[in-house]
Length: 452
Figure 1 (cartoon, rainbow, N blue to C red):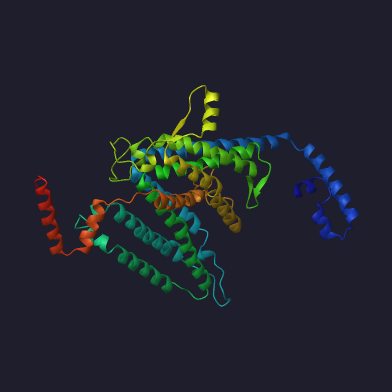
Figure 2 (tube, rainbow, N blue to C red):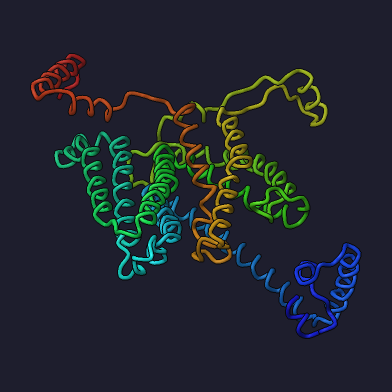
């Protein structure tokens, strides 16, 4: 409006400015609003149509760019998934590194305001954001991924003399590395910037908890079977796409103030679409052993011959239908429908779909509030049309944590494995007890007619 006021002196100032300059009465205020509204309509009529054309073209271009990069990201995920578990883990580590960089970049001592006038402006290299925060990032990854390696590859780690010290002393090594970083932080404290530095310390640890720990759970999902990573992640993507489609086409009712573009229509439409998508998408991928088998060898790929005893949730069963329902289905289809095939995994898919639709979006709302707190539109520009990596991973972190907790609590089958027994033998038996176990085991196998 300011540009219109300068070009057309007859256009009165907005109501807020009139009230600020003069003590007007409600009658004058009403007249001012009426005059202003009619004048604005005249001004918009005089505006060149090129401005509207340019704005519409920009919106179309943004939609095309966003759609293109959505398909590029999905294709990239499929390629990495086909290459094998190790490539998916590397992809997760890359994403978490980009997210950590975007989040921690919001704080820097270079922009800190001195706590006292006696202290001059901070100059020189910022020892925290450039060194210590990445040190804590590396130490946290060393600890968490080391835990995963030891847990999922006991049969390799405890059988290798070179890796054995790493496995038995992993937590002590991790704690020692953290203490070194903690001492480095204390030594870097600078008078006049103590509040900022302690704020950074808390900020980095919060980032490690929300980003690195969440990524650790996502990696564990991959190691438990690619389907526990791929399907939940796909549900979040599906929900995001359909929320955008329904919201941009029929959305009218705002959903939450933190995200003005989110609508109730988009939320409900995405919820229903995600449920249907989950059942079809999950049924498709549960047919492949490559997707459902826990990892045993990080070198396998989609071209490898992967077999395993499937988890009971993937075993097909038959459900006897309720008689009235069977009658209705038989009459409508012209066939005799008395039973329905299903797997327990389908019920778990419904739970995952409910969470991806009703709870995971709050990760996005959290990120929206976060951006408003720092007065930024996006966390970065690493993905054209989508903003930064944080803008795409906010819901995925929440979904990954839930999937791991849900799987480990209700689905995982805890069987005795060679790795678990080897861990007990190596870490809990003396050398004499280990030799005694070998002799007894050899004697047992020879009694079974197996030569050792």
